[in-house]
Amino acid sequence: MSYLLSLAASGAEGATGGSQYSSLIFIVLLFVVMYFLMIRPQKKRQKEEQEMRQSLEIGDEIITIGGIVGRVVTIREEDIVIETGADRTKMKFKRWAVNTNVTKTEQHKKEVEAARAAAQEKKNSRKAAKEDKLSSDEPKVLTDDDKKD
Image (cartoon, rainbow, N blue to C red):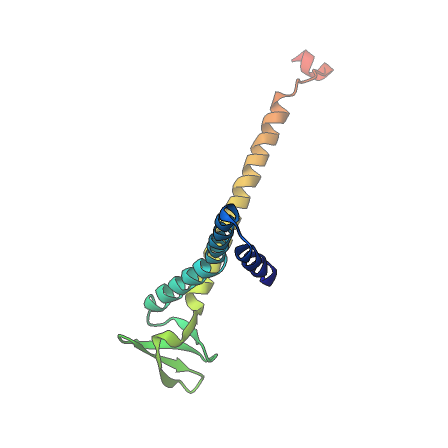
């Protein structure tokens, strides 16, 4: 990366009319690539996290940024109260401190697994139907017993 920047800088120093435009195009292209490789995925991740935090429900099992695992008991505007451990200790956190919604994650994994199983079953049924069709299309050889009937 530093090589590319030094190349762009050296091109800009000794540039004439045509190479100035190529240096400018190179720098713009570099920023476009950085946007699609770094900035856009980060914004997408932040949006997903915000949606997850806004969709918290009472009874969801969560993990906080600090690693505390608990079940949501109360939800307010910007705060949540979770219950942790066997002694049912209640703690109050800000919504931004929620890292993972375990309940939704497990539910999503089950849905994905069910979809995969359904797709595999469909694939197997198609394969079986194709094999049946191939076996029924084969010419039948009549045996002596078939000829008597």
